[in-house]
Structure formats: C-alpha cells, structure tokens
Length: 220
Image 1 (tube, rainbow, N blue to C red):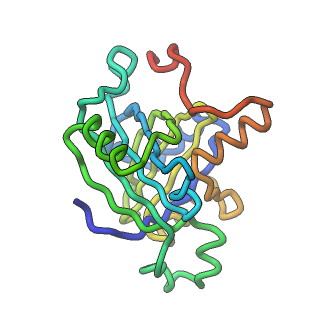
Image 2 (cartoon, helix red, strand yellow):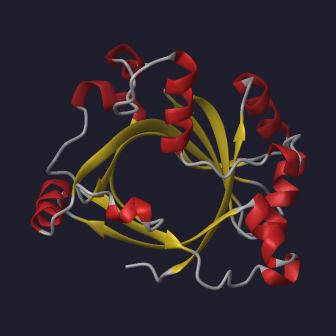
C-alpha cells in the first residue's frame, strides 16, 4: 500500500487534441503509460455520507485500450482501490504560496491507494460495509512525463464529456508544465469528472446517470 499523501492536481480543457499531442512531441514528452481504458466505480452510502464529507472510495479496473471493447471490465481482474479525502495540512506546498492561493487554484486532497487482486471481491467487501455503487465513469488515459520537470505527471484523458489534461505533482512543477503546454492559472480547473459530467448534462438537458462511452467508442 502506498503511504497516505497529499495529491495536488489540476485539469485543463483540451479543445484541440492534435495540437496538444504535437506540443507534447515538441517538448519531447516521454510516454510512461500507454493509452489505457479505465472503468471507475465510486462507492458511497445510500445517504451519500462520503460525498457530503468530501471523501470518496473508488475501484478502478484498467485494460489496454486495444482490447477494452473485446473484453470489457472483468469483475475478477486486479484493480486499484483508492480513498480520497479533504486535505488536512497542505503539506509541502506552503513554500510556493499561501494556503488560500493554493486552495484557489489547485485541488489538494489526501490520498491512499492499494492494489487488490480481485475487483469483484473488493466490491463485495464494500457492499458488506454498507457502501454501494454510486457513480460509474469511463475514460481512456495516456500518461506522460516532461524532461527536467521532476515529479510532474501529465495525463491525457479522453472522456465522454470531452478531452482534458490532468497535471499532478508539486505546485511549481504543475505551473511550469502548464506554461509549456500553453496554459496559465486562469485555465486551471479543480472540478472532478463527476461534476464536469453533471454540468454537461445540465447544458444538454439530459438526466444524469453514469458517465459511459457508447459501445462503438471503446473499439477505437
């Protein structure tokens, strides 16, 4: 199990994915994880206790993108179990700015993760504790690193509600990486994919459900 740590991240909207991929190539970005299909399920109580307290528990199943349409999420596959909660101390970021400045631009949360060998059994344990699937969402993710920016992880996420970059790492590294990619702090988003999905549903006049691709998308 990884140690509990502060997760510092932002999202950036990608209006032109070809331009972003070209910029990453010019910056000599290194692909550290190939395009991967993710099936994510958030768990909560029927009364939404976790969400009301700014917490989440998630089971994530990953598949190589090329076989995601053929197999789909496998309940007996290994998975990543994640807990996220409100930041307690904003550890390690104060030297780059005040607490209020960090909170206004960056999403900072406590995070702990563990790899489990069987997603279905983990889901059964959560249900036994009174937690049930609350929201499912899918995406394709490709992860990059930029030379000479230590600790920065750049993730290109293709989602049913648009394409986003997610930058995670130290505050200074995020700021530098965003500038190199053509963004400024005015472009930073702290929203979760769940909230982005709900906003998209409101704009389109659709009833919210789960954030899933149509079956044809998974075969690309």
